[in-house]
Amino acid sequence: MMKMMIMQFSTQIWKGSNCIILMNIMDLCMLTAIKSTVVMMQKNLHHQGKM
Image (tube, rainbow, N blue to C red; front, side, top):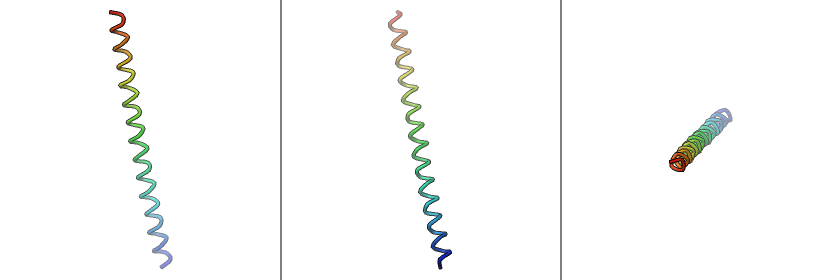
C-alpha cells in the first residue's frame, strides 16, 4: 500500500516537473523569437535611416 502511494506521488511530481520544464522551454523560445524580431526591426530601421 505504502509503495503504491510513493509510486503515484513520484509520478505526479515527475509529470509536474515535466510540465514546468516544457513551459520554461516555450517561454525561452518566445523570448528568443521576440528578441530576434526586435533586432531585425532595428536593423531595418537603420537601413532606412541610411537611405
